[in-house]
Length: 478
Image (cartoon, rainbow, N blue to C red):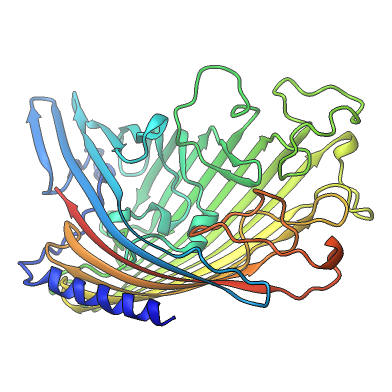
């Protein structure tokens, strides 16, 4: 533990030396790649922001912005209990993100477009967003393409406008990632958005055979595959901003002339996702019961199994005098539809039962020096359901039960466009019993499993795996 604190102290000193002296501050938060919805009289609002490089001719406009995040991370893992393990410690420099956004309009200001390229993802995941928007009027706008799904607030906030260097643990468990489809959005109320809405129909692509969320980021082929098996997703998000619009962010970046006005917003997200998946027991062993099922595989090669997942989130956001409060609650329920030898037997635990997960996030930040220095605190908890999947093996659905507590400091040299972020996290995970290989995932690590004597679950006692994480990040946007 002494090693951890010495490293934290060194990073804090480095942050102070690196950041001085401060230059003039910007009161605008640059959410890399945001287009405003259409104006009240049907004229599109094409305010793309003052940053970036803009080219325009008659009927055409393009603005280009690039964001880079360079990070130093130190992690110290301490597993509790007599059988605990250590050693997954590291210190590492990395380019966490390098993205270029292009956006503007073509032919008319109502015809808007966006393209977001991720240079560090590689392969078929370079394109993060590619969408076209017909800004008909403020009440209804028509969109098509791929974007980050408008389901929960924190995930929709640009990574360049976060209070911490990355989003919370619970957000990483519940968010619905990127999605391809068609959707509409709009706003009721001009200066006061009494209602904002997003509603769409999307592909939906199963994130993993043990992770029943959407993750439709990669380029999908025009051929039938295990990625396309009756997968479909419907999403709705509603927001109200009764005292004025709360900017998408995790802190209060308003100028001195605006920060004394109280603002708050409330949001609701609903998502339904259905798909087939390639597993007999939800955690691998694909097709292992094919010979005993008494029936052939379906056309996709998936072993007669599908899932329906309902996910809900309710979030609130408060801003006043540099103080920001963001809170969200998440609930998700997955039902499996198995047939034949794979059907669920509640008595013998010979199948897989349903999953119900929940969690909450709570984040508070305060701007000590207007748009120059702020501090933030984060607290979130995940209650991850576990279920029986054959015999006496108890499985975790996606993640282990987890508590995350964090402290962050941001030094804004030029607002979000040039800033230093320093944060410390303590993550405590419940070590699960008898998890199948590859059946358990973590946001910051891959937690080990714990098997009781004789390989049975003869006791409900548990142990914990704790992580201390220290991060220092430099971000620049141009």
